[in-house]
Image (cartoon, helix red, strand yellow):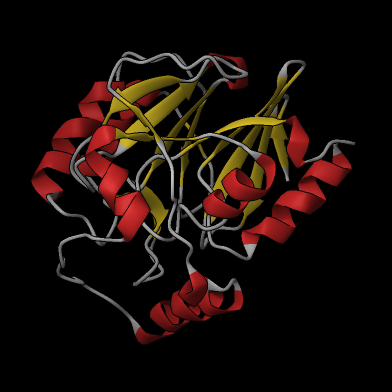
Length: 235
């Protein structure tokens, strides 16, 4: 789905990932679930392009609902996969600490897990080879994505700022639809390793210039990054 010039979303409000289309090729932000491969193909076809036009995939963190088709893209099309060094092991092996579920409602929780099953969420292929990135890096990819460390949800969670798309991609640093309660609107994300650190990290995007703040779960959010921290803390 096209959101704006250069900016497309794959998936839906349950699980989403993003495509940045430029004259120099395509950069992907996150890879959703394995079944989002078909969403990717449809979006590429609508642009008259193919997976061979993708220059890189940047992961906001290493959780299974963000690395879905990453290994397929890497192994079949040679697309490099970029992830913060602190989450590299998570993306390669799935190793992560257990976190408290927190509040949940049966209906939304079942919808989340049901959607994950339909999108082959139980068939995660971890990423055999990754390129490690760090806070402050500007990647030599279409749109010149800039990496902002956002530890908390995971040690290597990052935001990805793409000025060309007027967007900041935040992964699970926040959510606009809680997958376990169904509550909508900007709020902290569940399954977070260190909730206090995640809240503090929101201030790290405050000085970025963008009109879109785009989470991995929930509706796209039109706002200034400067407003994000206060809005989430008051949610």
